[in-house]
Image (tube, rainbow, N blue to C red; front, side, top):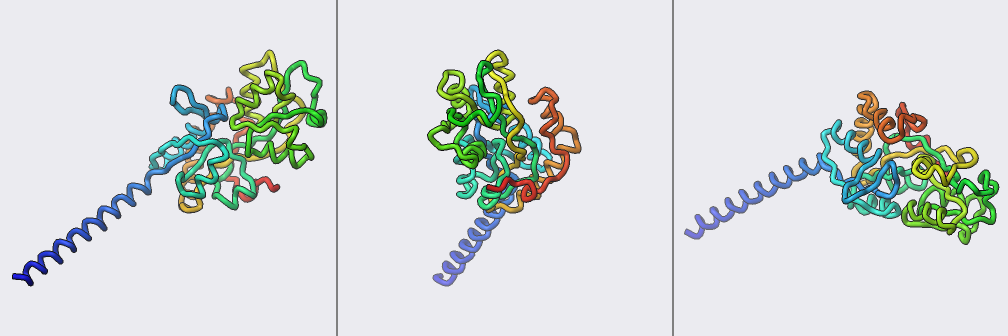
Length: 271
């Protein structure tokens, strides 16, 4: 009787183990089709949030890529300076926020091929005497924390006493408009977007200060995502969806379009 009971117990445990293994395998398969994407929603027109709804160029793009690759996106909003650490911690799989591809970031995250060509520009009030970057010495410049604009300013000899860094770019623009800063240095498409909404009060001056590329940042814990995201990006280029995003968000201005597969290592900004 004891032997029969023992055999029955072993059989039950074996069946349970088999069920557990099968369930785990199924969950893993499901997880493989889902990605958690981090986004900083203070970067219009790439990302913005209103009444709890996140929209923008990057959001439409990552959703289109995901659809092309049969992936499901779960969006997680984060401050910009929390995106790369979250990728490193594995709490998100990808991040979109107009993230400039930089050599330092490549050490901590993988990147997709470049999808947008940008650069830094100088935004000032229309009545300002500042006509170019060279006129900024001795003036207070506002920008967003942990961005390439901060690197550019410090790299060109600006003391941090003259750099006002904000958690979101809207606060930097507010500082400019209220006299708390004399200029804003930030990504040109975002400066242009702000200028379009405040055309009677601000203007960009001088040439672009840099040439830089945005990429989708990806967790190094999921290296297989690089090929899938790049494949999806290539598909939406060929389908025309990628171009339509420029029509929708930039009024047809295609100066930022990247119509070839640009390896992130080849276009990364060095510091």
